[in-house]
Image (cartoon, rainbow, N blue to C red; front, side, top):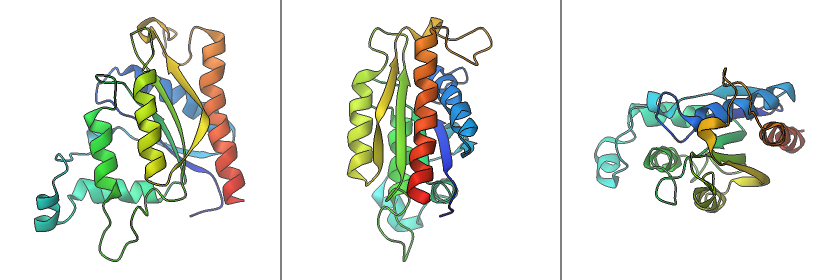
Length: 194
């Protein structure tokens, strides 16, 4: 790992106009302003089959999983906006986490996650803003040795929450909260690396 905060940013949604992709980009800008090096990826660009131990045993990790693991390994922070599907995480997000968690030959278990710091948030057109799903996201990450900062944001009624250009939240307090999460993640990563 490098001595600089390198933060990987993504959403747990494949939708082109995902509210969560918009939200993570707002927090990402604040992380960048806090002098972190940030990378945004779209999980839909990684053609991953559903995790299957038989497939892994027969063929090893799919090429897309190896590529995604490499990206994770090159970052010490994770900034994620995770939609809530049926009160939990999305299949897309969980499948990516499951594939990345699989060790390559000679690699320590959970190498892609151990010692990393994460910030989590969610956006939803509903009243709770994805809050129930974040409980599961936090539990999963902490169980695979990721430290999740306490600050989080669930954005309710998100279909009407963004400015016309999508670059900020209409509610100034919520916009400040999203940006504070990106900034705080960068600060924690800097301290742990420094």
